[in-house]
Image (tube, rainbow, N blue to C red; front, side):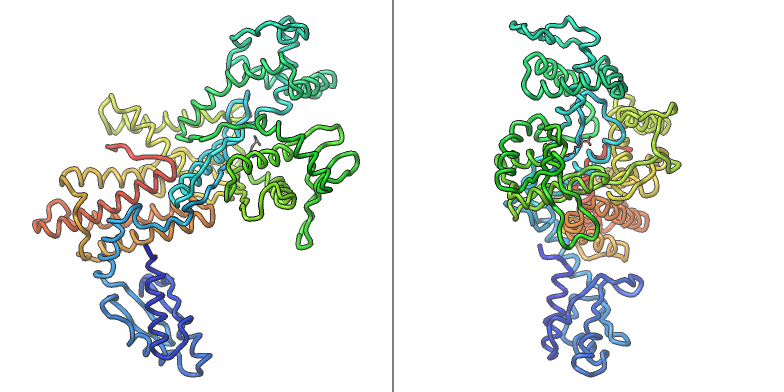
Amino acid sequence: MEKILDIITAKMQAAFEASGYDASFGRVNLSNRPDLCEYQCNGALAAAKQYKCAPIKIANEVVAQLDAADYDLVEAVMPGFINLKLSGKFLAEYLEEMRKAADFGVQKIGAGKLCVVDYGGANVAKPLHIGHLRPAIIGEALKRLYAFMGYNTIGDIHLGDWGLQMGLIIAELHERQPDLPYFDPDFEGDYPAESPFTLSELEEIYPTASKKKSDPVFAEKAHTATYELQQGRRGYRAIWDHIMGVSLPDLHRIYDLLDVHYEKWLGESDADPFIPAMVEDLKNRGIAVQSEGAWVVPVAEDTDKKEVPPMILIKSDGSAIYATTDLATMVQRMQDWNPDKMLYVTDKRQNLHFEQVFRAAHKSGIVKAETELEHVGHGTMNGKDGKPFKTRDGGTLRLEQLINDMTDFVRGKVIENKIVDETEVEATTAKIALAALKYGDLSNQPTKDYNFDLERFAAFEGNTGPYILYTIVRIKSILAKYGVWEHLPIQLPANPFAKDLMLAVTKFGPTMEAALKASAPNLICAYIYELSGAVNKFYHETRILTEENEELKAGYISLIGLAKEILEKCIYILGFSAPEKM
Ligand code: ARG
């Protein structure tokens, strides 16, 4: 469906033209004075300069050309503004079309295109910690938004499953159990199917080994193990398989708790086979050059305001690094999927890394020029006090612990307020807690830091996830009492609150487009907060179920039904859902 701004701009442009002025002056904007009008056109002021006459004269002429049926208010005001309020008829017809259209008539701007979303970035053998929350939930929301806007999408977690961390674990395991067959170079039999360590042992082995990195002998051993693993040493590959086997189910479990789902669980190890040929090629074509023993891809551009150092492809000791892997991953993605876009969601401290990799990818032709590359660098989640989030003993909080803390807090409220029967406490709690956690995060601009405030995020009032859920649940219960409502047409607004709600509903499509363009789920949060406010205002000011005029009542029901559908679509995109009762 065409957006309202575009429709009324086209009409305004026609009116300028009919009055003898250039159509380009007819652009209409959302009003910045909502107390006076809903939309406004300032084109007469600019036109006055060109046509050398009073702006108010132009504005008056243009207004006379507009179709009065479209507006409750259409007036020229000094010095030459045109103020507009849409008519109830215009709004009702527009909403009725939205109601009947697929996905509320949103323009599927991504139709036929493929977007790969690289988000999450979990590292195998290390428990997820709070630093993994933001990329997971922002990435999931963006992926769902892309899909809603018509794109085909592939979410890829890009596991950290290949680097030194694997060598460290192998080296540490060797110190502890040197007699395991994995370490016997002459062993030719089948390795045990059962892992030599459990998940909790693994979670202890890794940090212990990591702390020993400062010991040069141990570090050397870990580096050698990493190298040999990457060269395909059989026993080490078998340990690697065990690490994956023990670690992955746990990652799945936690991402499931967050309702975050990946189409692909590929990792750095999957990119590894692409590295040798890619490096050879870049060397041969002179795209990679030698610098102090390393191979680098210069990526500086004349227009750079600050220095962008070359991307290191191969270190002087011959090893590949993070950037090499990201570039090789692009080789795989282009070859297998040939996407129109790759979107990366990581901590913004990786901004430079992606700037370098993106430039190298386009410069080398590994990624074709038409394939867009975008990095969404998110800010940090801090504690309530604005300081880095730490456990009491100064450690990093596990993601699972954060989820549990939120869940416990919400469960307390659910039980205390006797919201649901005992059997439904857990399911309801999980939904509210997830909404609190995700909305608390997503309502912030991704690039900004924010403070995690459990009580505030979980509040049922204010700009929170639970408030949005509460609004949806309220509408659902009215609809349930009413009966079958899905077929009811939208009617003229019966009061100013209905009209405000209708205006809010019309902003759905423009909001989705703006959120996509800016990679900003926070715009969707702001929108549903506004829409919920309009719903609740309407609810408080209007007797809905007790309305005696059945015709009127049906109109109310249809309107709140549409608002509910839109709210539910929005929270689906944000990655949470509403319970039946609250
Ligand atoms: N594993 C990485 C880390 O912990 C994040 C991966 C992000 N994705 C990427 N394609 N580099 O920092």
